[in-house]
Image (cartoon, rainbow, N blue to C red; front, side):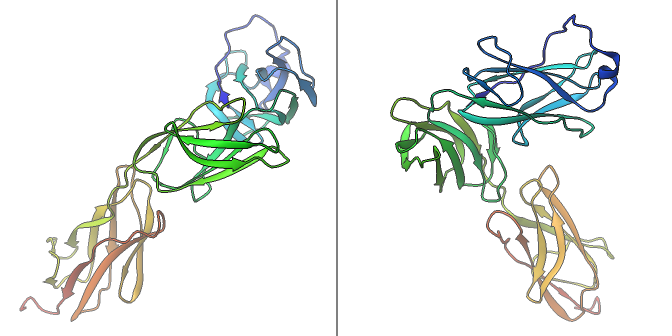
Length: 308
């Protein structure tokens, strides 16, 4: 599948003023690669489509297929016109919609693409079900693939040019695969059928940032507290690293203490208050993501006096 979305050139057609002021997007026409206009619910003998729509002027617009965004958003021109070019649409029914930056969504426009079935990758997801577009990246080393092929045949899934799996295509022309233990780096996935192969689906597996406690600061004396050191502070702040956007919680041997969320740079700050005196506290970070990652421990002992 090789979807390409671009903004149309300025066109001279004059639209109805009521249409230009309408804040709800509308798909006006769909034309195929043979130059034929396809009515809603109609059939295209070409896999290539041109979708013309209208929305409030200078709005960012996404094209949705089966409610999933495809390609990059584009900006409508001053007349509210927008055009999307789609190449190599798979055989079958496809429902297209437009979604504006105001989150208004057009009515659906369905087209049946009547072309010879070919081996293709329809979509890829991570273990949490998040879609990964071709050219995207992930921290996960396991990926799920769903694709299409000629019913009753076999499809080979290639990873960086090497055969990873041979898969059966069911009677609905679908196949699926789970690829595990991918190492960090760029990977090219291709589905190869008996007489065709898909466009490459490229995904970057990013190396995970270590989850860690880098230092602990006492909030009362404003002093760093080393690992296994005593302190009179009963309120401390933990600072450390995780993957950007990673969430989890600080735990000790008694259970969960406080949640954390790493910022866009992969740092987090968590304050722990009301620590019990005359007791050792051993902190760890436990991630909600990526297989419940756990940091190395950081232990402090809260004492009731500076005479230690």
